Length: 332
Ligand code: AQP
Image (cartoon, rainbow, N blue to C red; front, top):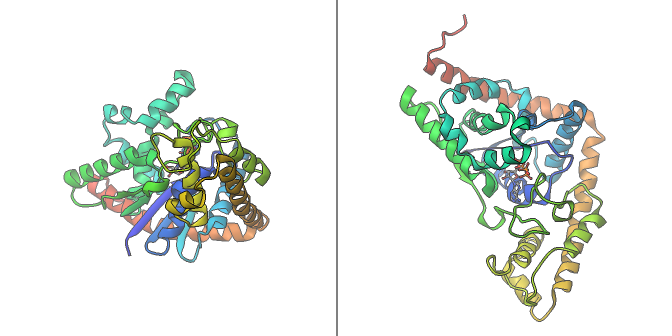
């Protein structure tokens, strides 16, 4: 089986709809076809200021949501990044292989550092894509399910894997991004030209999966569309309506063409009312399942202990090879 690897941050208490449709849904699908490793990337979460107690709670909530979304610990390896120290260890090696200019070209860093300001921007935020390279290469992953915003980081991963292999001999699998075009970028409900994002979206533009269902329904109903009245998919001319159609089709397993037909001659109000209902029907059981996992900390801890053990077995082997290749003296 090919390997898949991906990670999700525990920075907010709740995943948002973009995280789910762009990434987590693909995690669930790939556990059927791949030897899949998924982790909650707490090391990445401290690249911006964090409250320790909140980080611990959010890490648990992230794991509970991944389970609620359909990850099955018997079919994939689910773990917390900091439980596998090899990430930080290989991260250092990768830091030493990356050009400063190369790292400076990461657009996500440019956006985030501009937002935080020079004094609030840590070196950790700068090198976070390089730690992500180590995250992926440790597992010799073939496929990395992510949203469009991560494409550049996967390119960096490929470059560094190839660079290491060329310089030191074949060591790492060169991974490919697994980006599902239709849902690769879910847009802000209030600004359909921007990505739905936990840090950049306004509260009304962002659907948090763990919010009260009626709050999410209201956000759908007040989504920005356009002054036209026809319901059809056109990402250029009608980004707001197209975003709603994408969300609707994906959550219900229908096609956009079917939806266009269903809403022929109907107004935006009808589409929004129905999608709001779809949203409520989806988030209600999702929230309940998440809560069930949170209410059972022993099971959750057992899942993570088993996941960390499985992950470490793979990560330790890769790290040992990489350490040997770069010339570190083996510890006796
Ligand atoms: N709007 C989106 N559409 C599709 N996929 C998305 N992802 C994020 N936003 C969208 C994907 O979700 C996965 C987890 O992302 P993360 O843990 O790195 O979270 P993030 O990138 O911090 O989420 P945000 O909201 O994008 O945070 P900020 O605002 O801080 O940048 C990734 O695979 C990502 O592609």
